[in-house]
Structures are given as C-alpha cells and as structure tokens.
Image 1 (tube, helix red, strand yellow):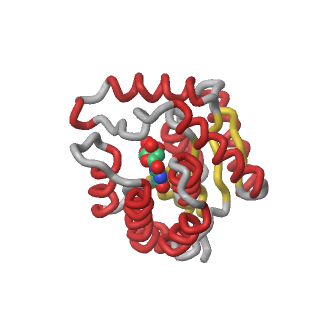
Image 2 (cartoon, rainbow, N blue to C red):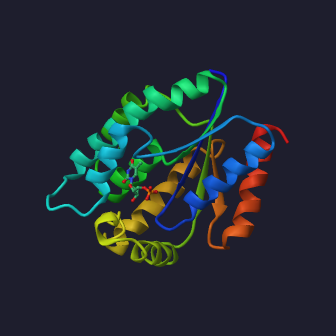
Length: 214
Ligand code: TMP
C-alpha cells in the first residue's frame, strides 16, 4: 500500500471537521494528492446509514445495533474509497474511523471492548491508520460549540442524536480517546483543541509536517 491513512478524532465540537478541511488545503498546496472523507459517510450507503444514526428518528437503536451500523458504513467506505485511494498512493484524511467506535460505543455506551474491536477489525479489513490526530478539549466546551452549530441548521437536518446524550456519556468518550492515545502513543497525537482555530491549525500542520517528513 503506497499512500498514507490519517484519521481525525475527537469529542463533539472539537473542531476536527474544520481542521480536516484546512489540513487538506495545506497538503494540496504542497502538491500532495489528498482525499478528504468522513465516517459515517463517504459512500451512498454510508450517507444513508449516517442519516439513520445521527438524525433524530422516531425509533430506538440499541448500542449493539449502533456498532453494526457504523461497521457497515465503514466496510463499504474502506472497500470503495479508502483502500483504492491508498493503493493509488494518495493521502487519505478521514474524519473519524475505528477509534470512534471504540470511544463512543465501547467506552461511551459501555459495550465490551473486545467484540467491538473485532467487529472494527473485520469491517476495516484490519486497516489501521498510520497517524491519528486526536483533538482534545473539555466536553462542556465542545458541546457548547456543537450546540451552537446545530442550532443554525433546519430541524430536519439536525444531526444531534449523540450531542443530546448526557454529560457523563461524553466524559467517558473523552476518557476513552485519551486511553487509546496512552495505549498507542506512536500512532495517536493529541492536539489541544481548546485554543481556537488558528493555534490548532498550526499544531496540526506541524504534526503533519513531522509525519510526512518536513
Ligand atoms: P461527526 O459529528 O464527527 O461527523 O460524527 C458523527 C457522530 O457519530 C458523532 O456523534 C460520533 C458518532 N460516531 C460513533 O458513535 N461511532 C463511530 O464509529 C463513528 C464513526 C461516529
């Protein structure tokens, strides 16, 4: 596999979606071939699953069902978008991947880690990001930003199913992400996301430059 697979992770309102766009521009300006994509999403199936999972629906989705839905979106995305781009030598920047399922469904929902990890391995065909940038900030600050963004959208387009969970759920997710970062310090780089767009952008650029060799 010739390309680089770089994922962006973080709690709600961490600013990673803005940062992934800026990182894409930064790398493209340097003439590098970049694909920016997201989970759940990135394919027609993934987009449909995203709607089911994130928009407020009139039905319940159990934690286990949630894992399989995220995994189904991931399997299609890995197969149809990520692996072909990596094989073509591209740098794939992906807004969330398997770490999100470990953080949200295992740590957040309290599902047992090993089966969740195994489902993630199966869905992603064992693909592990070469680098993961984790945007960290206190969950209260992130949720405040997230709700400001959500309030600006039409009510039928509000992807707020997770944001509306209680604070402890979000705290467990943050702890989960930080635990993964402690377990895999070589792969995960923690960036302070509380400082605002510009300082965070500079930090991301220096992480990317160091990783890609200047
Ligand atoms: P986003 O808001 O960053 O686009 O992410 C979508 C939401 O889905 C966010 O609340 C996190 C959640 N999520 C999971 O719970 N598990 C997963 O595996 C993924 C990819 C996202």
